[in-house]
Amino acid sequence: MNQQQKGIHYFPGHMAKALRNLGQLSSFCDILVEIADARAPLSSRNPLLAKISPEKPRLILLNKDDLADPLITQKWLAWFKNKGIPASVMVANSRNVLKLLKPSLGPLEAKKRAKEAKYGMKRQPLKLAVFGIPNVGKSTFINALAGRRAAKAANRPGVTVNQQWVNVSGDVILLDTPGILPMNYEDPEVAKNLALLGSIREEVLPAHVLGEKLLAFLSEHYPEALTARFGPMEGDNPLEHIARRRGLLLPGGEPDIERANSLLLREFRDGLLGRFSLEQPDA
Image 1: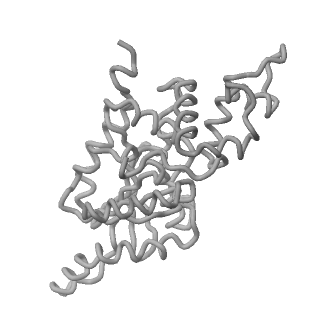
Image 2: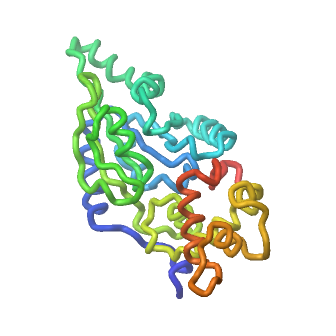
């Protein structure tokens, strides 16, 4: 039985440790901020994280909104609203992130402030636990809030491996946590979505499998994207066309399919092919 038939397993040791600690640490927080990727809001949410401190107010932030299909993102916001889950969109490296976030946090913060007023307590900083799967932009989000490099950030999974408290201002404190994936992905399509987004390391799934998935997806949902980026397709193999178009040739002059595949995946992740959403709520 091959890997795709059995599902995908990818659960580094630091994730298991972080998951054990997160439940205890989140009990000290006022609001849980779960960051997902706007291009795949369901695939990029970890069901294990949804079970942590269910009594706490929770806000879903759909990050990388600038890379997602804007019409589909609006459908997702309506979908979360219908489920009774507060959700908002975000580009983590935007300026004035805290100002943009305040309207979404306000209703969730009200309970804490009402309690302080009731018991005559001194106003305390709002404590936010920020979590999500790898490479959804948690560290970039935290750095933008803090206005400094308070958390390690990179466009690859597994950079943050320990929890840390980050003082954003006198009124907001963040708990930064490592990205945590489910132990298994029984649905290989979910795993492929996450690999396309860069949340699973490339070696977990073969690059050619991801290239095939991406080409099929673009052909079905965004057929004009490849032509807009690489010119009118010539021949039956898009990767051969891309290789020739970009000068990716083997020593004998044949197109380098492997390099063309890597280039296609990289330009998709960087948003150079356009704004796409891999999931729709009505699918």
